[in-house]
Figure 1 (spheres, helix red, strand yellow):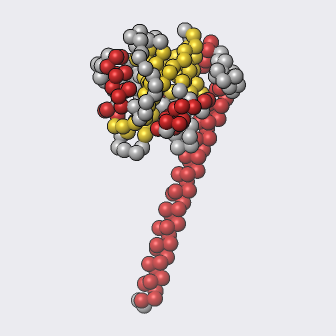
Figure 2: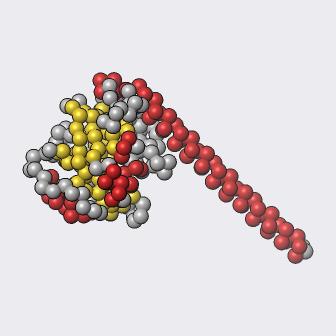
Figure 3: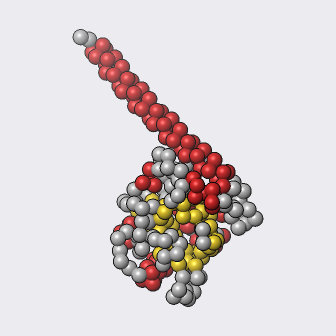
Length: 242
């Protein structure tokens, strides 16, 4: 066999491998694009069905919570944060797995749902409520929480709101930071008290939130999502309500 023929065969083989790799990448992009689109459409329809497509006059949308409960009996409330970039239902989870892969209405979806830690019972009434959500690459779900790495964003949006069956609750942000998940106070299987969690969280904050003295009585809500600057990192935003 001539050298030229061998070289041609090698080039042809490389071309086939490259073409196959391009096709695999294109298929994955198409598949993930369809998943993201499906998730967005699902939540757009849900928001519209309960009145959340109208952002209101700076106070967040007026939610039909009774209708939300009919969609999913696990409904714990509605979260409005980051100037409306986060605007969705929160499910009360009875395990920490289901809503990672299921939307609020129970259908399977990559975006999952916002959901409370199984230990946060009853949600928004117990001393510490932890809410998890995915950091989606298309900017949806809890991705906007990463903006709290910037102090200027915090200054423009120092509160988040939860509409619950017990009333509307405003939470003042007292800390925001990111780090390894096992270093995030209040997340995981720890037995720390609300006061200890708050003290650690405020000390770890990326900037001074000017939260001053905080009364002993009140409720703490922690919003948690993945943060990819380190291995197994989380972004955590802590909100306090007197």
